[in-house]
Length: 292
Image 1: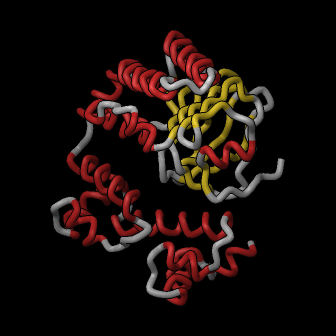
Image 2: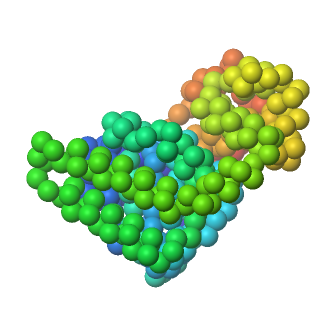
């Protein structure tokens, strides 16, 4: 099946592909989905996306890593992550819940509880559930859909947000042991790397210097690069470049922006500098890559 081009995945984009139950452009639920379009090019996630695989499987790329999302697994994809769908089995069936950061903030989810879970799921975007947890989460998704289908009453949004709060607590319960082990087993270098990548994902479209991130983390650029290298095998600058190049590729292939506009979007001094940077890291000029 030929893939499609999407500049980003958000609720508006999903609505254009498939009818869904939603609250504006901030929250949506899809149940028993058996048809998922493939994304021909890397695509940026612009919302939070939880999925449960009921049957079958799909091969998915998340931030340069390939995963197989299969039966009885929970997949969690977060804002600014880059995804690509490579293959979906004919028997695939799943439940999807999609919501924006704004909706999550309005739901007043306990950030102290949510952050360890989100960090855990970033490192483990496809996790296997116990049968009872799978049934439990499926029930929540179906309940969310039932509530969202109701007439647009004064309290509908509040009900959905409280249910979403409950889902976050349930995920914490389901993975509490793994999250504790994940936190306890981290080295100092891994902790630094995790914080560094959080900062990079937040600022990479504007900042590409290691010194900027070192200042954010209150350490020297040399120490930061050493810690990141030990934890990940790559230097801090290489991770920054990977994020920038991945975003540039996505914009070149799946948006209508000109190369000049993309260079501005990624905070390059001018189009020429962006072109040299892109060619250095890919072997292609931006215009050549657009035609591939």
